Amino acid sequence: MAQGFTDSMTLSIDNDHIMQYEYLSYYISVFNTEKKPMKNVGILVTQVFKKNSKILLNTMNNRTSKLFPNKHDDHIININTENVGKYRLNIEVTFSPEPEIEFTTSTQLDFIILNPIQLKTSTVIIDSSIFLEVQIKNRTKKVIFIKDIILEPTPCFKVHNCNTISSKKFDKEETFTGKVHLDFGDQRQYLYKLTPLEGLEEKAKHVTVIGNLSVVWRGRFGNTGKYKTNDLEITLPKRQEIEISIHGIPENIYLEEMFQVDCSIKNCSNDTLPLKLSFLYEQMHGIIINGKSGLDLGEVTPKTKITRKINLFPISSGIQEIRGIIVTNLKEKKKFLLTSPVKVVVMKNK
Image (tube, rainbow, N blue to C red):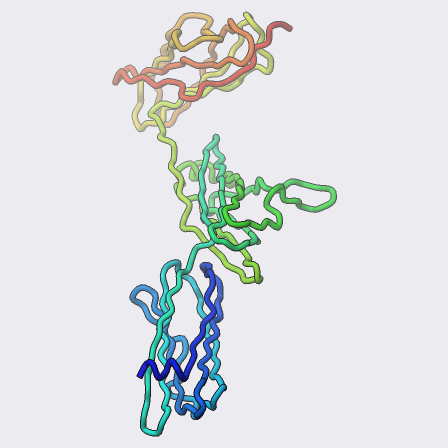
């Protein structure tokens, strides 16, 4: 029975590489190659994805009454490819070569929906700002055009697009993200800066979701696709019980001339702590402490920041580091070191 159908009818489907979120149109043609008409031709097309099925075409209740020799019955089915993965089209054709005789045959078409881009993100936190680096790579064997990249931040952040520069010729000229086309294996990088909105600086310090990213592209025939990430999460730096920072650094620092800086110590805990400021001489190289090591800071209440001036003495010229500053919690004998040494330039003379 199936062989008879194969001789009398032809089913053809145009298949190619398929990208996620493309709106696809498939052309299905049932062709009568016999010398006699075929009657009551019906077509049923079902799309199967995982365990879900969807009817795309059903003419079983409205059949073609008579299909003459060398004629064809044509249909177009549309597929919205929202999900990445393996798909199957089940195609069933029913026809009657003779009165009261009905043949049914079926075939299957398997295809895979691919995500055309590989997207990687990384974040760096500097002070209160978050820098988001986005890397996009074309995974398909076709050319795709990056139409737009949209970063939607969470409500406490604003976004600065670091991929654009001002130009007299253009109001806004992209540095490397203009009308970008990506061949197979090509990749591009994009950079965004997120800063807290005014009045939300403290809240932004505790946010772990910074927003989501949408990438819009066009295929070679103008078809548009869109990929939207899940929430972009960041790992907040571990806050120590005690935070140490250096500021108030002089604009000019000269070799073998003492200078002062401000050393701020913040009690980030929920307890009042007795603290002591001291220095590790073995960690001090180009710049050393000028004076005695060891300064009692007294009882520091929770969430309080205190500032003390310290005298430093540069013994080497060039780029040097202020480091080796340590604060001790006298109650629990815990020590906290300045985690980010501060680089300064020491000049030889005035």
